Length: 122
Image (cartoon, rainbow, N blue to C red; front, side, top):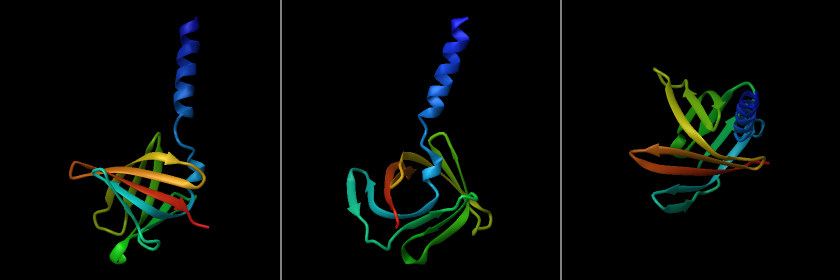
């Protein structure tokens, strides 16, 4: 009878290891970009993301690039659906760190791992 208890405790413990999604809502500003062992600081107005409690997001990048759409979190992943394009574009990002004031997103593009580090905007 001990096995069902241990299995339940393991599953509950694993679920508790995921990031706290409540910290995601709000406005975020990118402060650094990492790719292929290169770190580049970003100007303050380069990249911004806003996550709303209703499951929508807005991403504003360099050169007037804009995305808006829906998002959802699952375990340690963030799924974005950019509805400005037809057909909509879907992105899968790994939540490497999500705290009240820090957000670190990881993605792979052309077999190169990239990290964006964000801080919460006041």
